[in-house]
Length: 452
Image 1 (spheres, rainbow, N blue to C red):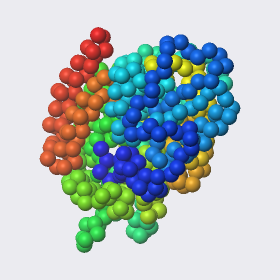
Image 2 (cartoon, rainbow, N blue to C red; image 1 turned 180 degrees about the vertical axis):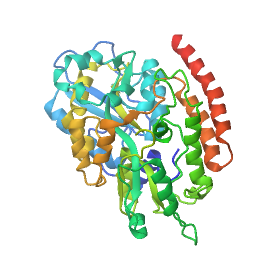
Image 3 (cartoon, one colour; image 1 turned 90 degrees about the vertical axis):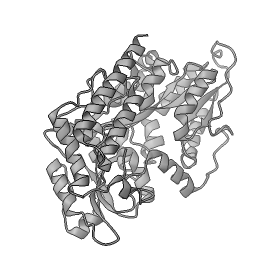
Image 4 (tube, rainbow, N blue to C red; image 1 turned 180 degrees about the horizontal axis):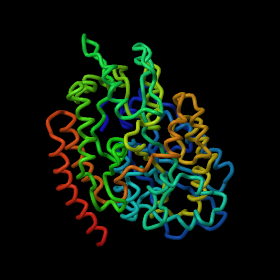
């Protein structure tokens, strides 16, 4: 849980406010805010050549809906037998609305699926196996998508979705703060010790305008955090099967203590209470020199920061390590138009589709390497955006958990204990012991549910 950066949810609310409600074209229906699309009648697919309507459950804010409408319009001109009809949820509501649709049997033909929901929705049968469609479509070239992105959508060996966005978390820095202090910018040769010493150097707490060298985002062990927080110490949160916690080690304790001490010993990062004094976070307010930055953060920072900033590789410890994560699209069990839905997704999630939708706009870092340069070249990407690509190519891994039914419960346990460490109310030894005890129990219970 980051203290100094805007959450995705905050960004979507603020974006809508900043740009105003933009008009969208007729292919975006009036259904908004979680209203379920009408269920299709009949179990059979439409006969070949018959015009059909394919529905898509999306989460785009108003500012991005025009981009979607433009893609849909061009697609329908190429495929006059298919009409694309969109229903929009807010991002924060979508994960609740989709199971409601599923319970009512009114799922759209296609839905946005955040990587954290891909496994449980596949397990629950909300999304369907599309491996046969992928295998039969040579032009789609699924091998052009990073394996680290695909693994989020693979269930029992088969793909239940295709990612459109996948990005790592690397080091962001406020160039203005570094320039004012006459300190050289971070670079790919930095170590964790360099990070800590530079954070101390850039911290100025005198006066009524405090400045911190570090954002205070860690200790944290979520699926977009643990590989950054403990990976440089050679540690992992979970085994590959996500059935066993691996944090009961001296190295993990050392890593968690390192981040805790940056807040409470070095005083080079704001406490949670101090961070709450900034509505959009201390980093966005220009009061923090360095934070972890995900590729999907870049639209937020482009819109709401008034300082110069850039990124570089994540600092190394005994190894280079960072988390990565993403989002994608799936076809649902209620779809009566699977073939037409795949026709849409195969173009939407092709190299050209990713460039058009997310690359050139800067909206998201494409899950295909061949499309990535378009995002690097976009107006809102940082100057050294190639550092994200370097991380994906060399040391970023998909952050766990993402393939256990215990992910939500485990996240709550971890989050509660990490919050205590960041606030200075807990001890590392106690946090590790509690997570091991409570987390092991929920992982075991989830494994039993999977067997059932």
